[in-house]
Image (cartoon, rainbow, N blue to C red; front, side):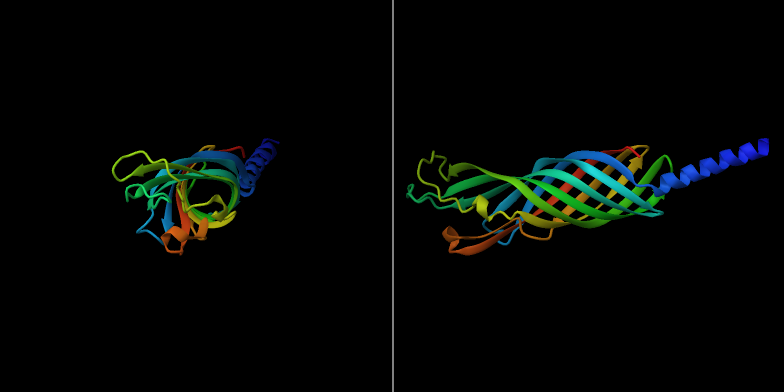
Length: 226
């Protein structure tokens, strides 16, 4: 009788362990992002990293050493652009410097394929990569102007950027590494823009076509419920 009970306990333990490894994990995540824009007119536009944030849900389907992780994330990416434009009203022949802050809110769906380098019940170390599609839900541009001699500017400003030229759908490629400790999961990943977030033609720059792609670092912390 004792042997039968022991066999039942061992069988239940093994089956529970196997099911825990096979069943998908579900969880929530949040983190900070830093975004920087690349452009085909780098001699005119320069970009600096700016902080944003993200929150979302994820599922992780475990396949032994490999796993598949789809996510649904709200991203609020922010970045800055510096450039020079010419006022419509001559302002003592002075150029006008512009610093724009670009903010884009979007719902993103990455699908990642991962590999578990270290796999144990206490700690895990992972690498992963995969595509991401991003759907913009809101966009904003803010400006700060300055003249080359430091004077105030009160003329008309023909800013070359318009919200209508920001694309609603963009693609990214993600790659990164993560660490799992008990129910907590921490990721560092890089998002490389594969399609333009902005494309248009700028008359004040001799009708040159311009395009922006966004490149993003993501630092996130998540909690697994299963």
